[in-house]
Length: 209
Image 1 (spheres, helix red, strand yellow):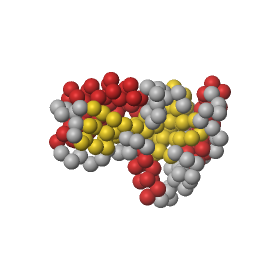
Image 2 (cartoon, helix red, strand yellow):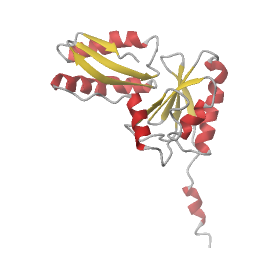
Image 3 (cartoon, rainbow, N blue to C red):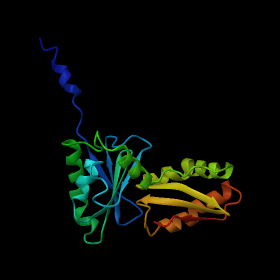
Image 4 (cartoon, one colour):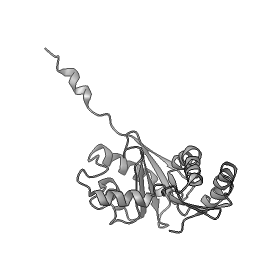
C-alpha cells in the first residue's frame, strides 16, 4: 500500500525573499515568505561582533564587507550598507544570499542564545520607554496605532523615549536611522499628528545615537 506517500507533503515549502527600497538610500529591506522572529520582537545589530552567538542569519549577513547594520523584525531583515558599493551592484546577490541561507541553515536566532544578548539586541531596537503619565500613554498609543505600522513597512522602527516640557523624544532605528528624509517625516508627519492628538506636544525630536 502507498498510504505513507502523502506524508512527504509535510515538507516545508522553500522560502522566497524579495527586496524593497526604503526611504534611507543606504538601507534595503528584504522580505521573507516565512516569519523570521516572533511578532513584537525586534533585534538590531550595529557591528559584526554584536550578533555573535545570538543570530546566525545576522552573522552571515555581516560576513559581507559592505554591511554596517542589520535589523530583524517580523518577516523582514533590513540591511544597511556603507558607501563602498551601490545597491544596484549587490541587491540581487544579497537577496539570493539571504534566501539561500534561509533554505539551508535556516536559523535566525540560536536556540541557546544568551537571554541577556537577546535583550540587548531588542533594547538596541528600542521598545517604548515606560509611560510616566496619561500623556505618555496617549503618545505611545498614537505611535503604535498610526505611525509604527507605516515606519515598519519601510523597514524601520520608532519608539517613544520621553515627553518633557512639550518635547517628545523618539528613537529611530533600521531604515529610519540616519535617513535624509526621516527628519522631514518626523517634523511634517509625526509631529503634526502628535500635536493634534495630544494637547501640550510642542515638538518631536529624534534621540541622539
